[in-house]
Image (cartoon, rainbow, N blue to C red):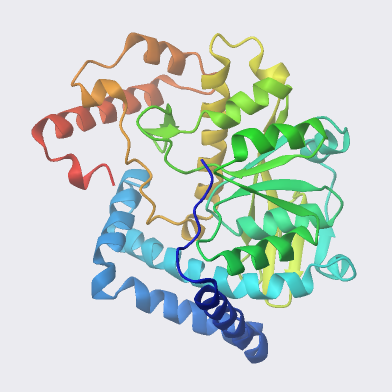
Amino acid sequence: MPHKHSALPFWIQAGIAGAFRSAITLPLTAGLAHSQSVARALGAGFAGLPFNKRHIRRAHQNLEIAFPENSREQNQALAVAAYEHLAQLGIELAFTPRLINHDGWSQHVTLGPVTEGFRRMLSGGPCVLVTGHCGNWELLGYTISMVGFPMQAVYRPLDLKPLDDWVRDSRQRRGLTLVSKFGAIKALPEGMKRGIPAGLVADQNGGDYGVFAPFFGRLTSTYKSIGILAMQFNANILCGMARRLAPGEQPPRGHVMSAQLGGMRYSLELTDTFGPQDWESQPDRLYYITARYRRALEMMIRSAPGQYLWMHRIWRSRPVHERKDKEFPALLRGKLEGLPWMTQAELNGIIRRSDLDRELIRSGADHGFRV
């Protein structure tokens, strides 16, 4: 289904787009350090506004599920940090095209050791690159394409067509091809056939009929498309993130790349790489692939919990056995038990959480827990 742009007259859309493009020149004029400081303050202020109560409450509920060992104060700080991070991203996106370009990228990006992930990309075989709404996902794709790996990245088109055209043009001039999520099923395989890696932000909710894989000890719905694409092309899957470094922090050893963009300091890290040799012997290949990259996403988030968008509806959809008030399915239990990294304690925790969710749905009190 193609995306429908705004029905506003084109001249109104063009005016709004022009005003937006003019507005993002303000941080460029003020400078990066000052703009980042202002953005953090605005993000923290926005988190506490009355009309944002629903979203900040959702962030709290998500954090209580993900980090039950944290105090309320710790999770409150992480919820506010998520808004500060989101505001900073807006500033950083304004600066990135000026700093990461064909002439100047080598002044800001440092190549680290060539890890297994880079070797797989250099081999020329099909690759699927997976990240989440953690760190700077725009910088990750932007930098990889700039250093010589053309990429096709799935995105949601903007409603204002002039603004969407500008975003697509500015990214594609630097080797990053944007693929609409509404046509990705057809477009991604065509690019993969030409040897262009596919990049996806893969932590969105996959709906009631997605693959339900563990995520912070709770089943969450995940899209099937990544696993199907990987199996179709026998592709290697690389899971990674661009993590903002704290002042004075050094990138970890074995990092793939580091980015120094004035006051922006990032470590571009891989959390997992795997391929057909890992899933070909699995009884349910699709489930294995989906559960493994979900596990990699959790690892990314745990490394920088203040850089994740906790206000998302992460666990909105529930598996059919919970919705129909059925016992935990033996088939799903068998799939979980078959995951090489699954421990008995983790499995027991997932089943207990699912039983709790089933009880909440039955009692009609689940509205505060699906988040």
